[in-house]
Image (cartoon, rainbow, N blue to C red):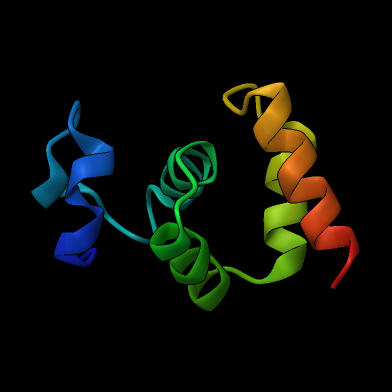
Length: 77
């Protein structure tokens, strides 16, 4: 189950049915697209950098701006 603080980012889904394992990529893409300090730290705690890099490289959901931010951040680690 996801923490309650993430509920506002999934306004268009049934939050209670989101499964961290089954919907992992969807969750990461949504939070990467709506990055705030809270979601940023949560993502870094729950996803390894290689997994985030793979999502950045293959996602069709991320905006150009968000893709650039995450690419720069992950390259600097």
